[in-house]
Length: 95
Image (cartoon, rainbow, N blue to C red; front, side, top):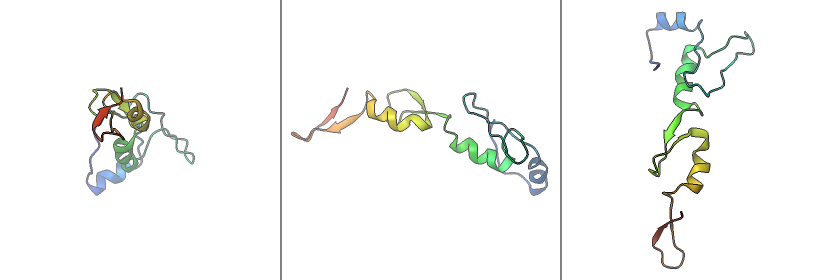
């Protein structure tokens, strides 16, 4: 499901509703004041773009899909990671 900006009248109606993150591994947000599960519409739009449990393809092009919050750790051990040799200054793969 993709959230988009909508007309002010409809937005006011939707602000009373709550939307759960569609990503299965994402722990659901619970509003501490109301106890309602899910995000208000505007927050759901923001969350969908930044959810740590949304999978992304590795930026080093190894083909793996990894969670946003695990990208940094993955890039340390990725089979496609390239470093510059200190002696010859040529690029080499670490694995």
